[in-house]
View: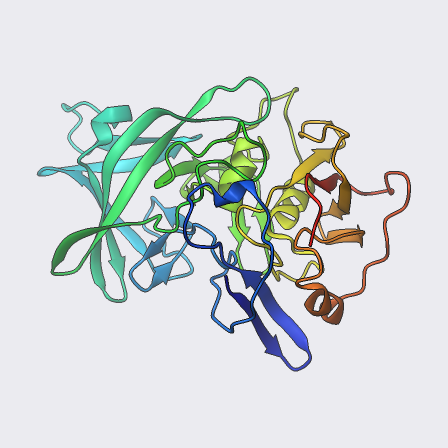
Length: 344
């Protein structure tokens, strides 16, 4: 395993670790040790299953032709010789033909279609190679299912297809044994929420304002977990499973272990973790042996034991100092996290 610490002056900018090679179900047990080795981590943290297309790591695209932060623009959606206007509606992709005499594409009919993407390196093709209509059930509330999309890209003048989500998680999620990543190379697509990956913020939750933007959330990623836990506009159930922007940001900070709130991820992909929120949507059973922290939209309010034990404590305390947690739920906290294992 690898540990990365990128620093500016005396304050670490990012500390994170990658998942061990080998058993694809390595998510089921915590790391026994971590060997330091300086590497570069992507925005969402080392080992995270972020969409990577050649030299571009991104998490959102715009159907109206606006560039994302990486300079990627959707030129068109195409299947065969027919051009379509792509639109993500909630958590489903629909392609409307420019010729009104033709039928729209949705569900399995999207298979074989592709996005033409303009980048600074030329035009890439982002192919939909499979659509699973019952790909991933929600983890909170009635387990209705989300469509998932297997996405592969092609370089300019290079017809070989490469998976967009190329760092798949282990089959068993670190959240709970019942939360299995049955399609580890697939992505969820959803609209309504926007994120700033650098400082791990939820910048907007307005469906009306953001309908032209959609997220590409690979299996195992923090954004995918937000959606499956109904902490997105597309995953919300009005009057039953509603969350504010601040609550969604607290969930994001918790998943990436942005303890200090500056956007620095202190975590290892797949580490088992139990959580609960004020609404008791989580999976804390009361039998967990170790309490970790309470969380708000600005990071951890306190810290008892970090999910990686002592492995990153020096880096965490160099970035910020957190007190031990009180006996009761602190005022203003939205989430609490517990560790279902004894840390090293």
